[in-house]
Length: 413
Ligand code: HEM
Image 1 (cartoon, rainbow, N blue to C red):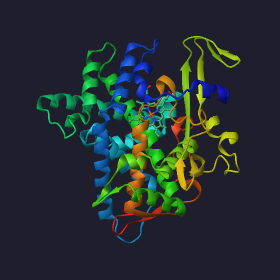
Image 2 (image 1 turned 90 degrees about the vertical axis):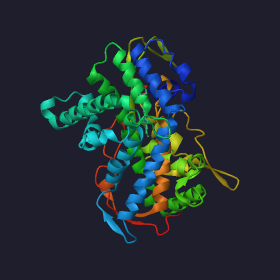
Image 3 (image 1 turned 120 degrees about the vertical axis):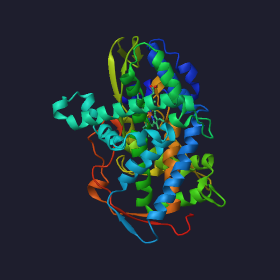
Image 4 (image 1 turned 135 degrees about the horizontal axis):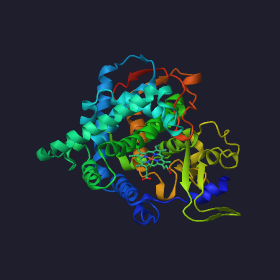
């Protein structure tokens, strides 16, 4: 499909207009309910609880790491492990509560086995050729079911956290959805678990990997690191080294540009749709019932958009593509790239988690640059992307990323 067609199709729609978007005439009722609940949870006031818990958890995680890592350089075999283990647990604990991982000791390892090998299920590799991946998926499903059933039995003994969420369910959203699914035709306990496993996948897979790349790019580049530390410094709260003025932080130009450029260069998703009517795209008609597959990659790597004005080649990470000079100020800008930057898809199915994803990446980078010095020792495979999951979303590194790390003496920028 040509890039202009993709651009036309993915007219950017803001999650704030979800009410309108959700009135999709041809979606099955069950799909609409799940879709609307996701959007309400992720984009409305319900997001306050897990967003705040995430930031608190991240602060505790960094404090713990600082205790372990002293003032002298320590060698870490693979920086990616911090993101796949520590950061992922922090996100799951904030959104699903702390019980799901406690009840299921292999959950995290199984999650990444499943996530790294999602294409096994997409191309239907037989179980006998990928039993390790199938077994991980099965354990995840039964672990999710175990957690849902356990949380459901706790409901007579409800304990709320300070954000008004039931502690056993992490976010009251999961209890509400469990109650609805239990009453809906077509949901048995395994499909109820599968529904939340797909949510857990959407929550972690892309955002964690994107956050890793953002941090790597910052620590690899001393001048970018300096610019980021300056921005973060302007968002710190006096006497609270582990807290930031989050709204201000999310609007900082370099931090936003690093995040946007990371999604451009690391995100390779395909979007699959079925035309519900004849659709005219320029001089082309996509007939009703046709399955279409489009990809963000041609737009993300179009040299006419991304490497004009002697910018670096499109396959090179360069945050400057999203920065513009305005007098003596540098500003974040997506001007001129509309329709060519589509990491979150668009229209009815556009990612409802994009706000949390941005917050997660930017706050994590801010926390790391204030609390640690990280010297990236990786080269070659560790810095290259693995193409194994091409088409599924954000791609991870193809090898280990060794670093040396030390805590910053006063924990400030
Ligand atoms: C950098 C991080 C992320 C990227 C690149 C991303 C990308 C996407 C894309 C492209 C879609 C649409 C797929 C399609 O059109 O078929 C999608 C859907 C979705 N995403 Fe994300 N996502 C990210 C983070 C998140 C996070 C953090 C959450 C949850 C908090 C989330 C929750 C969802 C959900 C629930 C859907 C399904 C929407 C629906 O159709 O109802 N995503 N995401």
